[in-house]
Length: 97
Length: 479
Image (cartoon, rainbow over all chains, first blue to last red):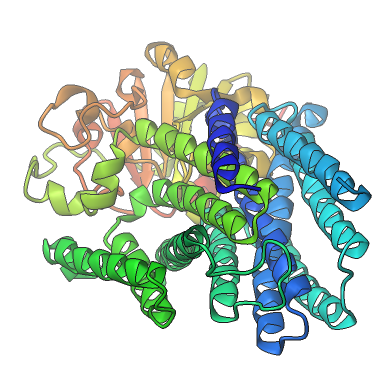
């Protein structure tokens, strides 16, 4: 893809991000931040690309693998912790006495 | 387009759509949990898409598989374990840690690509060929390093492993940070000029810049910083997207970057701080000693737990104002027991949640939810503020700045203009506190001097436990 079209992608992605978060109740700020944070671990795709393209270059394989590990730590941990927080909110209505 | 390319295109498109829906859904209580799972699903989909694309085109070597499996198993496992084990009170620092590692990942990708330019003429992968690649590599390293060190410092400060060193509150820090910034700029341009060796300079100086910028920031402003760093890690991901030429990465990174910025702004508003003053103003306490030191307390009334229990028993309506101190004392469950007793006696109990109660917006809701407090009893500031005049007793637990009337009355106060809970309007206010120390902001709280305020000194958990005992003696909650 040409650089210009990638810039368009960047621009539209940013606008989408600005639009998506309009009104968020304060209750959800922490989970939202944590969830968005997990999504930023999408760099795992870049790490994967690096490993696949490394073609037997050992240092590159190792760097890619470490990078993948960091990214997945971010992604998996982020989603789990967000789920843990949100589970508390959804549990409540059924818990009414 | 051949088949693998088409498939990847469709999958990427679907993943972006689902991620956007996920972020959108996370902003509503009802849909939040499903939305989070949707986003997680979209992420795994994108991985499958990428892997199947490579399987269909160039193939994936066994060696690559091995390293993929090692990296992903280790990363996921540690992440999952940490996410399950960490106590809810330390949520902000956990998010900071995850965030820093995301930044580190982007940094490593760019570093790998820069040090080992891959020969062999694969499409899109002859790096350092064009200016764009060099720029995106540099940006990725720069932002990634700042995100990493900044997040780690933020985490360490929240955990209490690191305090704010004195020199960082003087003007020296601006000088130091400007030096770091200029040095990283030099390294940046040097790198773009094709001088690969300056990459290490860029890594080191931008890491130092991340530390230098985060270190002077006070604990109260940390959530804002974490949210900003979260936005940075999105930008770092987008930059890494340019490096490996992936639209999906760019879109997702840009979305997180932009969403993080908005969230940062919302948090700033809640604390009445501008982003600029958070980033460059140092911690509030340093300012307040010079600007408004509004003097000593003159009219402190302290009272025993027994008195507090008697007043509570006679009340019709009680509002609880929880703060971070409550969470630190792990007293949210004890508090729930107290309120249960009051409710059994027919007393109306409501929790007033300031937008920035806890250490992050929404943190307090999470903590109270953990203690089984019914959702309907949590009232946001704007909803609960008109109720205070009709309230008999307010219990302030570990909250300080968010109930400081100075924010409304004293325009010389650094807090002036911050939205606060009008607890002083209630008939009686009990403040449960360890001692007379100031809140995050380091500013005197005029509330404590008011005639209708009584201080109950002690650890929140112990006081609440005593309160349960006293209420029991009074026969409250036993029918």
